[in-house]
Amino acid sequence: MRCRRRGRPRLPRFISEIPKVREFIPRDKPVEEGEVVTLTFEELEAIRLVDYLGFSQEEGAELMGVSRKVFWNILKSARRKVSDFLINGKVLRIEGEDYRLRECGMYKLCGKKRYCTFKPKDHCRRFNP
Image (cartoon, rainbow, N blue to C red):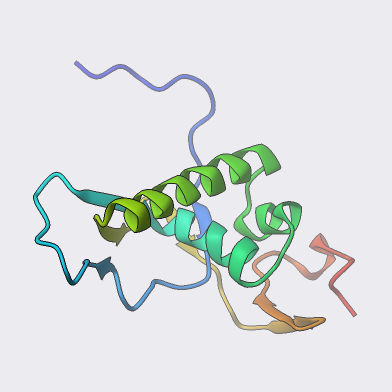
């Protein structure tokens, strides 16, 4: 019998896209079965927003539809997994969890950063013209 999870039910996180490449394998070393690091789509999205696109953690949390604390936990977990993959030469697999694709009908430009919105226009006045 499974125990029910306490607290509020987990809502799906918003991500921009499903990655085209979902597995990275070291070339030089044969990999054993236990040497696999699994990165979720939401963790990849957190790294993409903060480390690649340069958004702040607060902006990243808004774009993913989560609180700053939840976003920080996702980002911390993702960075730990990527570090383990790089340092120990493990296989990195990117797999889904609870996520929802952001509807990218409207792109906006904020400085040099390009992102798509998923909430009504009045959600974030800072980025609206």
